Image 1: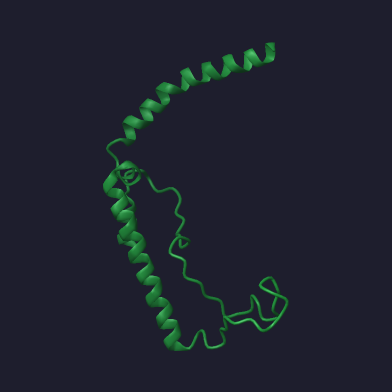
Image 2: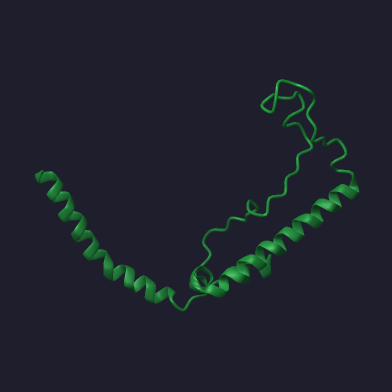
Length: 124
């Protein structure tokens, strides 16, 4: 029981010590483009637009690949078998293609909070 009280007291002290750090961080970030991107209601509309524009770009790339014949060997049919969990011999063989607008991502690191997601998107 004594150890639990010590842990609780340490956690409370840590919270008190970290509160000013969190407030300073919030003050620095509050007027930044990143803060807007993460918390402003208009950012939801921007996120939808970004998802839509990205999906359109990926769809055009897919159609271009179809026109070039990149997916000529692709088959989405499985032969007769033991049911939906049956593995096929050609499963996971090239060519592969999937378009999921919720899964496409570009990972960037060391981008300062003064840069908006939209600035990165326009640059790319």
